[in-house]
Image (cartoon, rainbow, N blue to C red; front, side, top):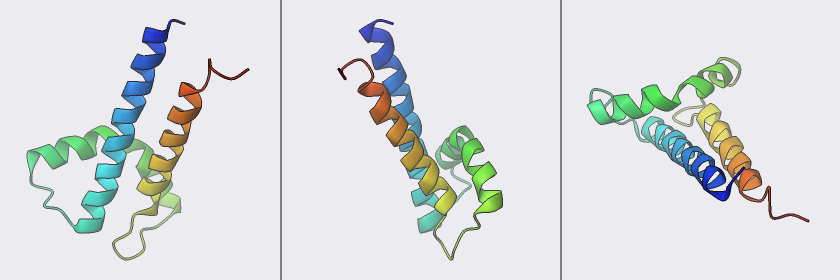
Length: 87
């Protein structure tokens, strides 16, 4: 794959990770969910968190499922960016 394709995939994963972090912060800060911008972000990135949320219940205001998804995708993005540069 070319470097442009790697850059595109990494950029998309970074945008998705940023959306998941926003989702985590929205739930932590109890943001108004009637805001169309908030609804769009949550609908776009909430699918992976829903699977984990069924196993890991939120504790008070902290949604650990969204946090774990953000950590997973940021790690994937980091590994993906180092893919062609190792060795």
